[in-house]
Length: 567
Image (cartoon, rainbow, N blue to C red; front, side, top):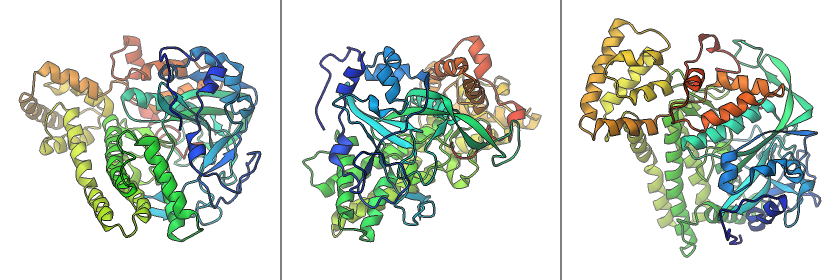
């Protein structure tokens, strides 16, 4: 990894040549390529990959790419001029045409393999070879890694064509799922939740593919028709895309002695993870086993903080397998995700997800992924009883730390310095009984109401007199608690910084991607602006349009209330 920094960080990168000069391929330089990969990197057929951390591969460009949108916020953070989206080479590269690269860039990208575990159970069934050697980036291809304002970023095409891990699929993404991912990543960043980011979104003016989806207003659980949709490529950006599943892959191979390189490859990728994402907190001067112990401790903090943030904003990942679990502590892979509108602890938008990945079960799912992460480290600590004991103590402290952070989060959401268990549990019961909107309710509560009347527009059903009395009693008890804190006006303003006003409402997002499919990006662009300021009071017009309860006709509606996996 080089130490390139900006001499003048305020200077914008205006040309593709300047962009190319920021490249620095730490992953490909540090880790090992599959020794059986093709020299020309045109490696597009599903095959078994038995060694190496990545496969060099060229993306497949979409035909007649058309600009849809880009993240002005991320461009600004990276120091990129917005004019770059008009640069021919830039457009070609981020619509999949790797021949647009200029030196010192390389004319190929890379895809990575990883293992799959679901809620702590290792799976091999989804691998066409039955052993896990065919599972990995099937349509995600990283094409660039570079330094911007002294920070390292990796850029990855989603829908960039087939790789050896495609398992027979077409490697493409439709505009519908690409719009969702593009908007969701930037929205999560605006909420203050660690996440992968969105750079650009391009759609093909010629290429279409068929995907299973839902007839409009259907109540079917599973898709009932095939829909022809435009092909798109969105570029997601992260400090790294390393996943728990990657460590699992090499740990499994080492465990069964698949080949003589397995343990060495596990060792190397863990060293790289520390160097890539934890070097500011883990000194290279420490012995490697001490670095691993520190890594276990730091990653525990990261994954717990991430999931607590998900709970705070009402996010449900839907498919929190180990392969969707970032080692950098980021929200990764926006496929069957959703945001809780009608409060339901068992909210799960993905039809294939099950309750183990539901809204309130995410802390438990995170712990299972964390255990798989620790299991993947232990082959590197063989016979080091002291380090293994430390790892075990860190593991045993996971649940306690998770509960501590969750309790503090719930306290913050209702303006308390300290968690009040009886008050919070009673609140959850009333929220479920009254059918409240998760985001609207906590935002309204931020105004410190003393009477239920102020909360009326948060309920999906009218409250009976008895329930109103329950609420008024709870509000009195709550006010008695918050009076023990600082000034009420400070409590209110702090709660508004913790409880967003605007949330992701799938039934509104549908309008955005359906308009985009006919070439109208106005609503997508409007949502991009609205969702970039989720904690702010916006215009009356925006409030009436976006701060609304979910209409009754959309409940149990396929493609809105629930959906199959990303496409």
